[in-house]
Amino acid sequence: MIPDSPSAETTIQERQPLRVCVLGATGLVGRAMVRLLEERQFPVAELVPLASAKPRTDHLTFRGESIPVRPVRAEEFAGADLVLSSAGGDRSREWLPVAVEAGAVCIDNTSAFRMDPEVPLIVPEVNGDLLDSISFGQGRIIANPNCSTIQLVVALEPLRRAFGLERVLVSTYQSISGAGRGAVERFTQTTRELLEGGARAADAPPAFDVLPLIGDTEEGGPTTEERKMLEETPKILREPVPMDVTCVRVPVFTGHAEAVSVQTKFPVRWQEALQVLSKAPGIQVHPGTIPPTPAQVAGDGLVHVGRVRPSQALEHGLQFWVVADNLLKGAAWNAVQIAEQLVASQRCSPVGA
Image (tube, rainbow, N blue to C red):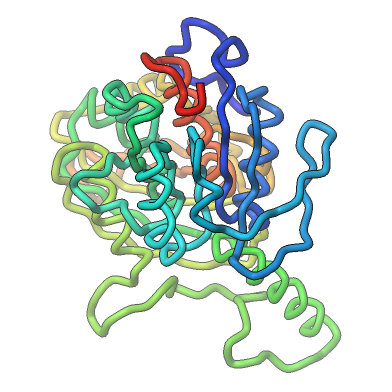
């Protein structure tokens, strides 16, 4: 299930069609972006799938048409209205300024620009109002947060508004697909080899194992994945939030899960929190004793919350479980959702109009 985007007064399909470039179109997230553009009937006049600068032989199917994937070059961004990027931070830093110079609005799924104070870091259900000042033709970069950050802040924001946040403690359980298509292929091969009695390679992905280390780390400090959540969360919530985060890679193909404990500023009963979460946009609450799991929510664009209960250690404390499809709400859907909100509220014509 992909929920309706917030606030559209007229349908997306009625809007002026756009020239849309997808940078990193052959990756897991890039392909999901292309699929969502078609499923959502996004107003695409021309789709330009882009990948690495080497000669390409790949094709993507869009609206029944086989479209060749082009090598990324500056001229491809000429006349582009929208660029969706998920090609890695180095590629984004290299090419998005070129697209901005051409007048395109760029929605970047990498970490390249997230903490730039001039770049809005957007989760539509939380801080989508920051998009109100952005129109097509301006030449702007909008950052998509880290996948684990997105599902966390969707669940935190309604609690912050209702009860305030004193501190947040999070442990993540992140799927293999969060590391990219190559990691999924290596995980599949490693699992097969281990089942056949093979030995585990030193650098093997965590098949039949968990790895509490995602990204680089320094002794006594957070990993890069943990640092992303620590820095991005207060930027999106627009207030400082003391946090502890541990990020763990688990042997699951798709879907990230998080065990969250929060201490609120004001007293809260878990039943009240459940009610607040149930009314919040983008969330599906599981109030019974059976919690959501990554396998259950694969292909779903909502953030799923279950096991809401009082904390045994924190004053004014709550514990809950958060699960989302990391390729959808954690990446491709959040980006397309941003694009839909921009289209629904645009106040000027596209670049090519």
